[in-house]
Image (tube, rainbow, N blue to C red; front, side):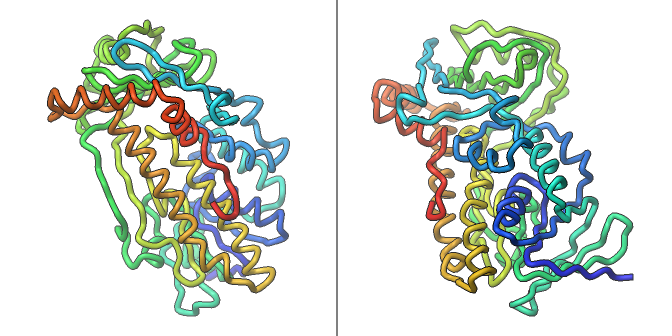
Amino acid sequence: MTTTVRTPVAIVGAGPAGLMLAHLLDEAGIDSVIVDLRTRGEIESTIRAGILEQGTVELLDTIGEHSRARTVGRRHDGIELRFEGEGHRIDFPSLTGRSAWLYPQHEVLKDLIAARLAAGQDLRFGVTVDRIDDSNPDRPRVLAADADGQELVIEADFVVGADGSRSVVRPTVTGSSQGGYFREYPFAWFGILCEAPPSSEELIYSNSPDGFALISQRSETVQRMYFQCDPALDPDSLSEAEIWENMQKRVPGTRLIEGPIFQRDVLRFRSFVAHAMRRGRVAIIGDAAHTVPPTGAKGMNLAIADVALLHVALRALLLENDARLIDSFEERAMQRIWKAQHFSWWLTTMLHVTDDASDFDRRRQLGELRSIVESTAGQTYVAEGYTGWPLTAES
């Protein structure tokens, strides 16, 4: 038995981008259907870090009481760049008038799912999407199977792939699952969650001869920390004592507060930008269109920036039959995407130490760091990139 559903917009993926897009479309009176392979529990329990740009928090404000970013999340007005045993604070408000918020991505997802369900959103979990049929360019179809294995066809005026880095929608747009620009980095992050109060009031980004470390936090009783490692490292191969030794020596001059480690993983570094973000009435956004290394905290924020552009373009297309904004969507989105790619690449290469780095490379890297912290212009560039360039329909 085949179930056929008709909707103005079909959204594949119930991540931050897909859920936020559905919310903004709903505000404009445009219905949508969201499908996701995962269960609601899987989506809400997959623990991922989250540093939110100011523009992202402002968009989350529009879901009203369901957003806890400003109440449960923690506003951060700066970060510390640490090298040669000394810390150098980058003060966001004095440089840009903006801030960032520490609020985990899975908490953002809980808020967005609750808001969409309260609004009556057609949100279907456990749906396996096979492919997108765009043989009729004016009415693309999502071909899928529902949670019970029954055939599901969603006919739409527009299909959006917000289904992550392994997107099943991407081949329809780019012609292949791998169609894009790709870079893999020669290092990874060993990440931990531990039961301990924060070691620092603000995040520390530390460059040391032994490699990079990020001292972050999750709450008043849980810390999130990372240190640079080999991508092939088995996260279970180190004892807790070895983990703390590796972490501490990468943050000279700072005493870390240790505690029991209850989660550990190795996060590989990759950058990807799809060759295209739209073909006809099918588009991809978020990780389906681009991924960045985590150093610049751009992943989820860049997905929300895509949504800020796309929802305005879809309103013009579907309500006013005006295709100008959707025709320019990719070009406008790519401008911000490549700025974010550069910012993430630049921070990554400035803070990490490669195995083949020469003495010249090391001294040049320290010179670059000092050029940033001793210059108001340099500090401002970091603050602008970290807190996020303003979100507009043209950004």
